[in-house]
Structure formats: C-alpha cells, structure tokens
Length: 378
Ligand SMILES: *Cc1c(COP(=O)(O)O)cnc(C)c1O
Image 1 (cartoon, helix red, strand yellow):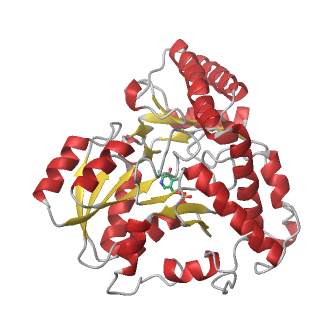
Image 2: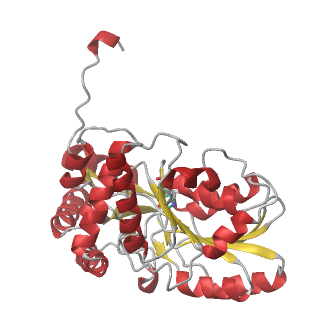
Image 3: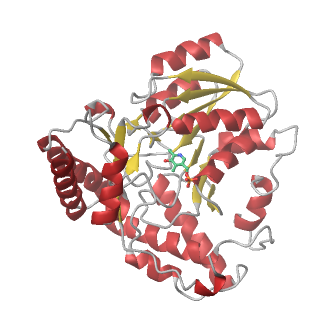
C-alpha cells in the first residue's frame, strides 16, 4: 500500500445485526460530533454526574459506585475481577459459553482460585449445580456468571443464582454486557453485588465504554483488601478520585470525552423510551423474527424459556456453508450477522436485535435476505 493513496475513511453503510456493535442511533452519533472540551471543565463534570444518574436508572440501582469505565466491556469485566479478587480467593465461575471462560482467565490472572462449573453451551447456568458446588467449596468468596451469554444466545436466572450465592455468604459478579437495556435487569432488587456492561450492545451507543456498578458489600470487600489492586488503571480507589462525588476531582486519566457525550445521549434515549418499553420492544421484535425464521424452516439452538430476545442463535441447516451465507449477507445486503464462537463455531448464526437495531424493518430485511440467499444456494 502506498501511503499517498490513503484517503479519508468513509465506512460503508451497514445494518448491524450481529453480537455487537449494533446500529448506533443518529442522535448518539450527532452528540459525539460536538466539540471536545476539557475533562476537568465544570461543564463536563456536570455531564459526568448526569451520566451517573442515568446509569442508576438503567441498572435500577442506587449504588453510589456506578460509573462508565473508559474502555470496552472487557475492561469492565477486569475492573470487577481485579478489584474484588485477592490472591488466594476462591471464585466459582459458572461457564456456559465464551464469556464465562474469560471470567476464569480473569480469576486466575488475579491470583484467585477458579472453580469452574461447566454447563452445556446453549443452556442456562444450572442453579442446582451452583448450590452443590458451594456446598463442596464452603470457603468460596465470589460467584461469577454471565446474565446474557452472547456466544450462545442464552439467558440465565440472575436473581436465583444471586440468592443462592448469598445464602453461602458469597458476593456476585455479573456480566450484563448484552443484557443491559435488552431484558429485565434489576441490580438492587436482585441484590447483585458487582456488575459490568458495555455501551455497544443494547444501549445503541458506540463501543468504548463499560458501565459498572458496585454495592456496599462489594465496596466493603475492596476496602478490606490486604494487597494493592495490581492494575493501576482499573484500581477503583484511584478511579473514584476522578469519578467520585467530591467537588474536588483529581486527574486519573483523560476520559474519552466524545464517547461519553454519546453514552449520555443514549441513556437519555433509554429514559425517554422507558426501560420496560425497551425490554418489551426487544421481546416483540424477537417474536417477529422468530416467526420469519421458523417460516423459512430454520430452528433455534436454544430452548424457548432460555432464549435472549436480543441475540438469536439459529442452527445452520445441514449442507449449508454458514460463512458463505454471512459473506453474501454482508456483500449483497450490507447486513452483518454473527458466526458461532468456540464450541458452536460453524453450527449457528447469531442474529442480534440490539438497541437501535431492534426494529421491525430490520427483522423483515434480515428474514427476506436470508430467504433469498438460501433459495439461491440450495
Ligand atoms: C461483548 C461482550 C463482552 C465484551 O465486551 P467488549 O466491549 O467486546 O470488550 C463481554 N461479555 C459479554 C456477554 C459480551 O457480549
């Protein structure tokens, strides 16, 4: 490539119906194009405070320690693990997909002892197995699980899993990257201790931010630490000097100003729509997609009661090259859907209906496009 040939990047217009990022609302993109100001400018600090209030609503929590980490969902995951897990802590990880595997990695890299409960991919985390494992490991400090497993399209029962963990005096770390804004999630009512999410799935924002929230019990565990958090960037004691409520904020890092404008706008839109209405919209359009998919003779990988409306795992029919279908959707229809990951690679397509992308037009477009391609290659 000759450097003089490189021109401004004009991305193609796509419809994003994969596992994220999902389509970003124009209002969010417009917000992000507003002028950058200093990150300690009083006007910016007021906006940071508003983001916290809006996140309280989105998470349904009053947790004081609620903020967006300045990096994608994976950084929210690490924030939870590096702050809460101390060397030697035993952590039960319920793994039913790719993201549970990353939780285990996080536990081990923080010097914790991971006890993995491996549930079958494509099924929900089994509460009974969690209880049995807690009985067998009474010295467990933390239970971690994924609420909405994007790799398989499965929803687990966060409320019940949390209740069991608390009966055994454990705190919970919950991955809500794909659930926030898409399915019911009630942090305070369900007594979730530590939770992280992402901006680019059901919030209709761009990638790059990870909203997190910690309750008093989690904050207490962090305060009791005998060792320093090994990540300087993600150490909540330091981050709070920047995002905390005191009038005197100290420089920690430079927040990604314009992405935060975008999250602020996205969260206002969520409030305008109403959380319950957003959940209902995801459910309604999933039902429409399901009709269309079943009319094509295709089937869902996950049983109905455990399906995520915002991420649909569709079984690839025998004899069909799943990659060719995705490629043609992208090339001929500018439509992106996801492939299977890990154990399910080659076996499923993942059709996302997340945030702004979750609308009836997209449902019809996707079903029609699939129909045309499948009829051509059969
Ligand atoms: C997307 C996703 C992540 C990772 O988020 P990134 O923003 O890609 O770092 C973690 N967990 C789940 C369940 C996800 O869907």
